[in-house]
Length: 450
Ligand SMILES: Cc1cc2nc3c(=O)[nH]c(=O)nc-3n(C[C@H](O)[C@H](O)[C@H](O)COP(=O)(O)OP(=O)(O)OC[C@H]3O[C@@H](n4cnc5c(N)ncnc54)[C@H](O)[C@@H]3O)c2cc1C
Image 1 (cartoon, rainbow, N blue to C red):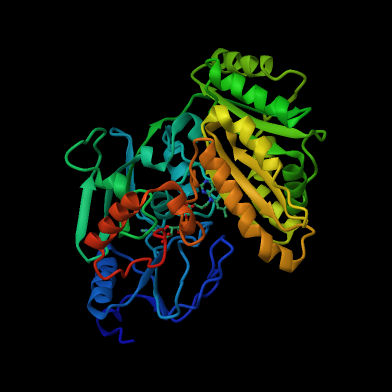
Image 2 (image 1 turned 60 degrees about the horizontal axis):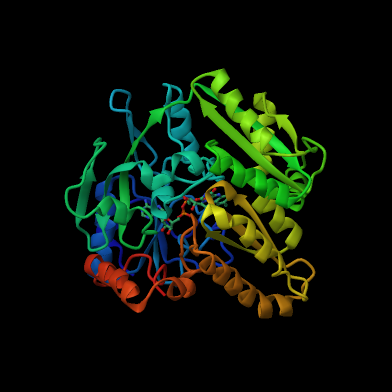
């Protein structure tokens, strides 16, 4: 492949000190070349070159995605890694906005805005590694989505390059904007299939003045879920309500090489409430306690304890992978009222071959991370039965009014389930949109569309 017109852009023939894969179960091919553009113009040159030469491109942030969106699906593809476009361009305290390049790591945005009393709530558990470009492309959520919403609720400006090489710049520091179709909304969550995003403006909130957190141990999964639904339906809106069962905790403790933070319980919820006064947050916590019959609360009232508990929550997925040897991670979402029933139904999916199914996660907003764990199943049984178990998980989500993905997107691993959720007409509309902006099908081919 000739790279003459783009030779000036920093590139490598293979990934160095970076994982070529993402966090899905799919193995990446080795791409022909990986480019590391530093400007919007370089991104545009790459996309124009791909259109002229009919080359396929895949875009990549930090590679923490869990559905194969950032991997190379065929050996002749060219990677565009956005990690060197990592500048914070503007932090506007008057308009409460921040404008950044796509390769900025999310936790850097948190630190920058909180240093001036502002707040960017989306907090995927990968926040110390994932990029904001990846967050926008996946419309990432996190524990605080319960009270504050997901990435799309904060994206008010986008700059980038459509797949056909056209540059765009939409929105800006506007808090309201309803002119025409919502193209920012279309691009947010489009998983790198429509455009390369090169600049993002996010709206910010005032940082909550008082935050209180506790981890509560419950005598049963049912007790934890009753506390959760009662809290959410009786006027308290915590900023997080993260649920996990004992096996998640023990797997994470082992993975993190940490001592337990409290006695062992069948189920836990990490509660966080925020407000303007101490009285206000104490009132909220007391209400949660009144709905948590027989539970033991440990206040996370030091930075050390808070970091340890959140660290354990963030390592659950990696811990389960260590225990199970192999696993698939699904992230279904259902209406909150159906969470207890869905958790019960998921427990019935444990397979005689030894495959186990475990649900945990952002249960406060109905987003259940369903882990299908290989455990004692043989390799043959894993290959043979796990696809069926996954399909049953999807069927349960849809039966209970849910969706096949709450925050991880579709990528490669879930595209075969799209027809379960969308009609042929719906899928045709999506395909047409893709064809209009990417007539040659050069950007992230083989992803999202079944
Ligand atoms: C331990 C762990 C915990 C996680 N927890 C959460 C969680 O709580 N909530 C959640 O939502 N997700 C979570 N994730 C998933 C993942 O972190 C998010 O999807 C994140 O948004 C991906 O960001 P990234 O920079 O790693 O993107 P990548 O994985 O590199 O890419 C993801 C997708 O975005 C596209 N893309 C990346 N940058 C651009 C760009 N500039 N322009 C266009 N397309 C682009 C890629 O093509 C790909 O399709 C977790 C992952 C891990 C490993």
